[in-house]
Amino acid sequence: MKRGELGSIGEKIAVGFLKKKGYRIRETNFRCRAGEIDIVAEKNGYLVFVEVRTKMSLVFGKPEESVTVAKKEKLVNTALIYLASHESVPESWRIDFIAVEIDQQGKVKRLELIENAVS
Image (cartoon, rainbow, N blue to C red; front, top):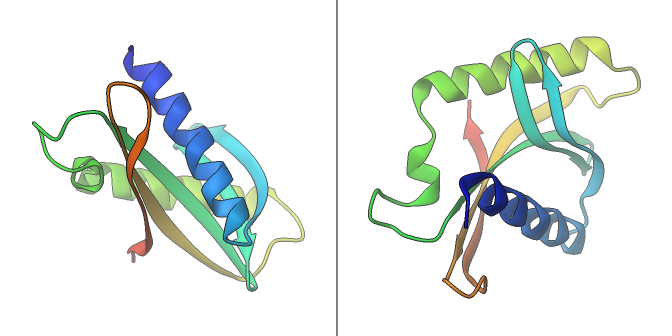
């Protein structure tokens, strides 16, 4: 499976997971000059920017460990651009991660939401 395909599968799994948890999905794959945010959602008066990391192997670490300081900075900058360019968004916002681990058959082995992953 190619990296892009794996990422797409993980994002679909994450969207379903968030919906079950009561999140309202505003959009997916928001792109701007600063970067990309996988999922933009709302819940309990918060605008939630979600970075999804999906892995089939833990040889190079857990999914959430693959988010570098530089990536966190890009996420913050991208979130700020989203906030500035969209109307009717909640004042409160945060950046969460969703870690997805799947096996070779595509079955979910682990799915974890990490709230306030970037402060």
